[in-house]
Image 1 (cartoon, rainbow, N blue to C red):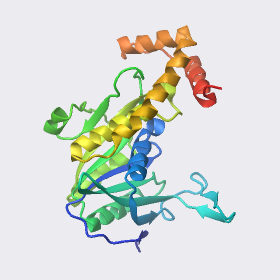
Image 2 (cartoon, rainbow, N blue to C red):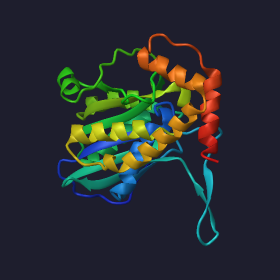
Image 3 (tube, rainbow, N blue to C red):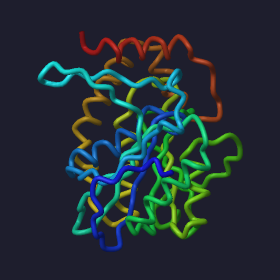
Image 4 (tube, rainbow, N blue to C red):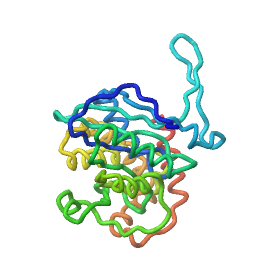
Length: 275
């Protein structure tokens, strides 16, 4: 029995898709921040919900209580949402959810079935990881894609081999169902781990827009990026040690030294903000 509930069955014309999942695949929450921005900015119409009842461990990923404007309390259960937007005159399916805990093969089948039902044959998957990169330089974007695509869009090659998340599994599973997939992975600074990274989110969304030749409103994130950079820069000015460490990363990411105290310092500053 399918876990997907359909809210609408739109007749789409050669739709493309973009997806992102919270969890292991989402360093600095960059991938989901990017997709959530596109969803809200383009006013996505919800078309389907994949309920996580069969795929979640609710003791690990708990539902949340939501109080509405009338004071009524509702339970918000983990789910994967499918929405449709029109961008640059083209139908785009957005897939936003939380990494499942259980039955990944069955989950991937349900995602693929839903994308097939919507007519999707091309998809960009967004991900982000914590790396030894400075925030002051352009966000490195690794592309899991054919060589020609990587060259055309200035994507870094990936030779990663090791544990993966649901995005990596879907990247492998969807082509078996006739859906071409390009994976975009942003590297986010390890010393800013635990904080949202709008710079990486903007970079991911801009690359996805270029790959699909649609406007996903990545430019609207630029003011948020500027404010974030200014906040981090202020933290650096208050710590010569932190500034020196970032300069070391700028010069060479190969010579890495542990910076636990610096991580704690900048995370504290970002949590507390200007106050």
